[in-house]
Image (cartoon, rainbow, N blue to C red; front, side):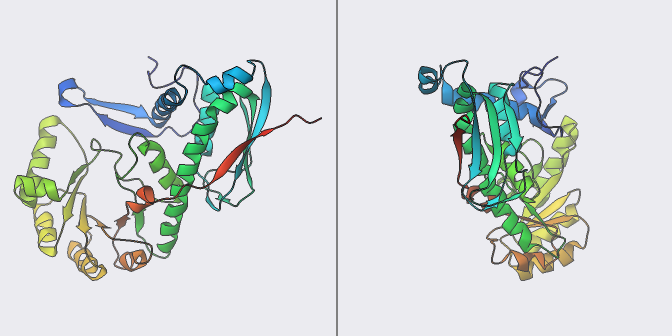
Length: 320
């Protein structure tokens, strides 16, 4: 059966990334987990974004461009950074009209400089013009995130520590913001609340402490037949000890620890689970945190503080 998220006969990504969706309790069936591919989620996003932008029609384009007019446009960078969103742009153009032909000059993850050509699109001018703003919005935002991510990743050179993103993302744009992090060299953490049990300070305080929170997480998964990784946020070494004694967790997060405190915590864990540092970690101190031997560092800034890169799409007049 064809998924409602996927346009029939259309796919642009050879890599079929899978994400696990959790159906809310009121909608649960005996098998309540549903796998929806990256492509399906991307196509759903494109459909909704174009509907938001075009409504009942792109009247500016419809009034002055004939249905039969063909043409080309060139996408050019106006900034320096790391390029991201090329494959998304192709998907948008071809969603509006599968006859659009794309000539690529750059790939996702390539360094980009002002004036460099990214891609050329040829096809019905109505489709090209209607897709223009969505293509630019996605590519500019994604390239800004990939650029900032790469700066953080470069500071981790020589260590085994990997950079994680967070859920501090733009609503309904998380899929592409996390894809931009991946393109920039970072590692995607959980996609949402459904694919990871993450016991944060408010969960812990509201249910009576770390031990009780971990016990309830284990009981919940057993009751519902779930197999999800469990991460526990800790605020001091005493809480790290409690999490280790309770056991059954995949990762301990050290929240707002200093580098010296992270080093102590990593030594205390001693390989019994994964470790993560988070909170007030920036470009100027991330290397000090990586030197502690921690496995992961999560930085919300790579998505919520990234500055979009500038680029434009220009019509190419026919050769005379």
